[in-house]
Amino acid sequence: MKSHANSMAFFIFFLKMKVLFLDNPLKISLIPRKYPLPNDVLTLTLRKEMDDTILTPVFTFTVGQKLELTITTQPVQFKVLDKFDFELKNGSEVIYLGKIQILKSGTNTQNFEYGSQNQRFQY
Image (cartoon, rainbow, N blue to C red; front, top):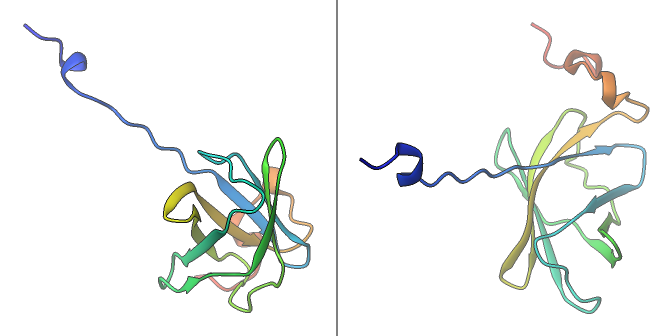
């Protein structure tokens, strides 16, 4: 008799949450599936979780031990506590998938309490 564990394939997919602060430079440091070359054209697509709004912000990148993205102009759609799925592509190849949450500057992310940002979702 075959073992149940041997007959099934399990795939675990982890999404890393990146935190951006409204009044700080919007920088994301990540390790992609495949590093781009410095002259490659990358596309960053953000999808707001609440209403599926799609954003494609202008950004620059540098390649080092990690891939560093800097969103050059803060999108007006960024609001405190918003969450976005993000996808980074090099041409048609997806090189990174993740999530972004927007917080107030100075937020202690180690002791974060969801209701501490504003009263927008208070019941």
